[in-house]
Length: 115
Length: 109
Image 1 (cartoon, rainbow over the protein chains, first blue to last red):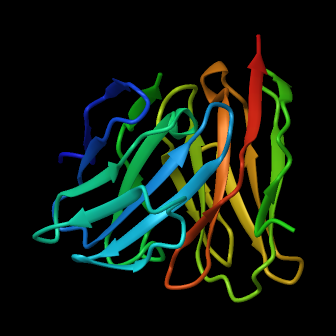
Image 2 (image 1 turned 45 degrees about the vertical axis):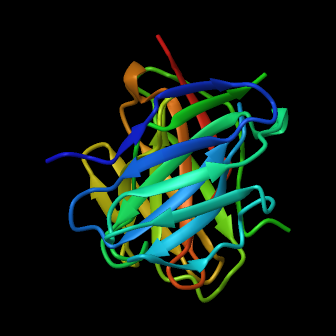
C-alpha cells in the first residue's frame, strides 16, 4: 500500500518568506509526527498529533513554527519568516495508535533551503 | 545526559563479517524499542522491533537488556548493502519515540 508522502520534495526560499510543508500519512494511521534533521545530525522531534489534536508540541523551536492536522489525515507544517538556520530536511512519520504500536513509518522528507 | 545514546562509529566491517553495536537509554520506564536504518540522504526505515526475549530477522538479531538499559543489533554475514546509519528508537512518554543519533556502519569488500 501507499506509504507516507510529503510535498514538496525540495523547497528553496528566501529568508523572511513563509513556507508550508505537507504530509499525507499512511491511511488509517491516527498518529502523525514531524521531525527535522540537519545535515549529519540526528532526528529532532517537533510535534506529535493524535487525530487532529497535538498533545505534544514541545519540540517546535519557536513561535514561527506551527502545524495543523485536519480530518485526522493530512498535516501541514508552517514556518513563518524563515531563517537560514531553518534549513534542514523535514520528515513526517505516522503510526497506528501511538509510536509504541509497531514503530513509525517515515515519508521521504522535504529538503528546505533558506537563502 | 541524552535520553538515547549511540556510538557514532563508523564501524568498518569486512564483507561477510559480523558486527554488533549497542544503544543505551536512560528512561527505565521505556516500553518499546526499535532499530531503524537510514541511508545517506534518505528517510529512516523501520528495520525491526526489539522484543524482551530478543528477536531475529534473517541476518539481523536484536536484543534488549532491561537491567543495563541497552538494546543491541547484530548483523551477521555483512553485505555491502548493509552500509548505512542505524538508529535506535525508544519510547518515552505517551509512546513518543526518542531517537539516537545513529551508528554508522561501513561494509568493505
